[in-house]
Every structure is written in structure tokens, then in C-alpha cells.
Image (cartoon, rainbow, N blue to C red; front, top):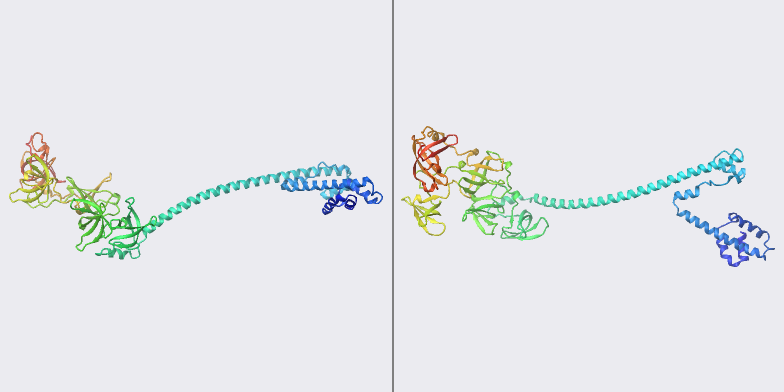
Length: 567
């Protein structure tokens, strides 16, 4: 207060400093001891010493020292506030271990011990020692507390850092998982949409199919899920009918991407997976049908049912229309695995091709089955029938070149000759039976025939065979016919007639002395002595020959014959 009073009077230029000191609320008791000393003469001898030089300098020096002390205090306070809690506690709360308690009075020592909660009795030396011990112990405790707090803060910081890293990793992993899940969900959603669209049936699906069986019924209904042929890659994809454009054309949307396209006949069909294999033929179903002009099977799509019961098709190959009978048509449906077939199972099949040993038949399985000649029904030919029938495919001898060429029998003449037409031109010829031979064995089936069959055998190598006989067996043979040949002597010749000539021998009908007949076979090595180049040069269909019985198997109905003399 003395300084604040003297500063503006003795040195007007220090008025700002005095105002600063006053604003901080500093009292003389809070000033350093040297400033307290300087205040006393000012308070006592203000009037008598006003003109003294030292009185002019002393307030100035005191104000400067006060300003320095205030600045230092503010600096230390700011530094203390910038420290961490543990550091601040260590700095401000650490006991003065190095303090010299011996200079204190006994009353001060006891006051300090009382404040600390220690006994106050004893001499000064005991009181000082007690305070020193307390200060050192307190310092250790504080140091330990500070160290523990610092370790705790470091652990907390490390834990926070680990937590942040873990959280970042977790977030990154979760983000990657979320992206992966999102992609999977998108794929699943698209797949589910396709599957749901495929499973979805129109509410009036049954009436639609029923109406389609009627002549002139709609091929597809709006909203029906079908298959459509892409013009870009020539593949079939799921699509939905949006509009009937007329003339068997439709506007569809692809299920995969919802794009729309107008498609003409031949580019739309019913879903293969939903085709009823045993149901009636419906417009829009894909089928395989016989193209009679070529005798081959081709795929097509049914367009409509005609009044006469035939079907109008559009071929997949060229988009041309064709009228076909249902007898030579077969639906394209999901293939049957061989594991689903059982021996003796009844089925239906269409003849795909015919060979010398039998025919291959499509029963809707993953591969065609073999219909062996032994499991075919015999061709019913009346006795006395000509060797060849009209329409038979044969090979005939062209005498000018001494070569055999393919031909077709056009007419059977009364004198036993045959009119035929060569395949390589319109020229016709009349030939005897010995100048003609069948291109293959006469079969009771032809390409395109639809047959009722039974599964006869399933092999371990993924093949199976069928039979025309119930249960899948072979052609039944009357045992008495073969038993009549068992007792015939090996050197005895009997009558026989050549039924068929092949590259490996003659199929004949042999007649036992009892009059019983049975089919037999003469191998080319048993036709005559010496080398036989071709059985076709040794005999012809309808020719009577003499044979010997070499072997009879009544169980399977097999007779081996020979035209050679007994050795």
C-alpha cells in the first residue's frame, strides 16, 4: 500500500506499474522481505524525506522487483498448468525434504507435527527428527504415488492406443466383411430373384396348360416364365413374357437384367425343367422329331396343334416350319440318370439309329440304350414271301462294272425279279434275287419309331440295354424246336434256306428230319473248304443249302451249322 501511494507522487511515469500491482491485489505482507523493509521508512518519514534522492530510487527499484516477481510467478503458474496431473502433484505436493527444521522454534515445530497428526511431545531435537522422518516418508510415498500414477497413465495411454488399433483393425475387418457380405447378399438376392422367378407359377397356370392342349390355344400367357434364345451368344436364358405380339411372337424381359426384347417363333420355348415327359404335346415345348426326307432326327419347337392331330414345328437349325406326326416326336426333358433306372422297368423310347447288331434307343436317359437283335421281336413275314419288299434298302450288282451300288426296291415282279432305282441317278434296273442283297439285316424297327421297352441290363461302365419283351428278356425260343436238332448226327446233312447274308456268314432256317424248324448260323469259315473272301460270293438270300449240325444250345436258342464235309 505504501508503494502504491508513493509511486504516482515520486515518479509519475511509474503510474502504470502501480495500477498493475493494485489490480493484482498484492498486499505488503505478500511482498518479499526486502520490499517490506523498504516500506517502513516511507511510512514513517514521508514528509521529512520526500526530497531525498534515495527515496526517489527506492520505490522505483521496489516496483521493478515487484514486476519481476509477478512475471516469474505467472510464468511458473503457466508452466505448472501445462504439466500433467502426476507431474503437477509431484512438483506442488512434494514435501520439503531438504528443509532445515532446526531453525524453527519449538512452537512452530509442534504446530507442524500437530497438523501432520504426529505426537507433539518431546524436545526440539526429537521434534526435528520426527518432522524429517515424516518428510522423507512422505516424499517416498508421494514418489511412489506419482510413479504409480505415471505408470497408470502410461498403461491407460497404451491401452487406449491398443484399443484404437484394435478398433481400427476391427473396423477395417468389419468393413471388409460388410463389403463381402454385401456382395454375397447382392449375388444371393439376384440368384434368389432368378430362382423365385423360376419357381413362380402364374395363378392360372393349370388353366393355361389345359387351354394349350386345345387346338388354337395360346402358346404362352403374359407373366409366364419361359426360356428364350439370345441372339448374341445363341444360348437359352430365363425370361418372362410381357406381351403377346401375335403371329407366335412375344415381347419378353430377361430375368437376369430385366432388359426387354421382341422375339419371333423359334426363339421362345417352355422351360425344359418343367416339361412333363409323359404328358401330351403342348405348343411351346421343345421336341426331337424325324425329318422323313432325310431319315434323321432334328430339334424343333411345337408351334400349334393341327386339326388332323399333327403338329406344326419350327426347326432350331434353320427356323423353317414343318408338319410332323406325334408318332415320330419325342419331348426334350430333363435327362434321367442311370442310377434312377432299374432292370425290368418299363419305359418308352425312340429309335435313334439302326445297326447290323441292333438299334440305339433314346429313353430320356443321359445316354442311349442298346436294343440288341436278340431282344427284338421277329419281323413277321408270311411263308412264300419274296426275298425283298418294296422300299427295302439294298445293294445291287451293276454288271457292266462288276460293282455293288446302293439302290431301293421299287417293285416285286411275278417272275421273281425286282425293279429298283440306283441312288446315284434316276436310272432303273431289273435284277434277280441273287444280284441283290440287303444293306443290313431286316429289322422290325426303323429310325424315328417310338417303342414300348423294358430295361434289360445296366453295366458298371455306364451303359445299359433295353428289350422289346416284357421284363427285359431276350426273344423267347420254343425249346422243342431246338431239341429236335440235339440228336442229329454230326455227319448228317439237313436242309436249310439262307435268310440273310452278312460279311461274316449266312443266317439260315434249318429243318430237322422231324419237320421242326429253327434259325441257325453258318460262319464264313464253314461255308466251304479253302479261303472265302466274301460270303456274298458264296450264296444269296432264298437259296437252299445243305448243312450239318455242329453245336446246339437249347437254353439260349443257338445252333451252329456247317456246309463243309465232316472231317
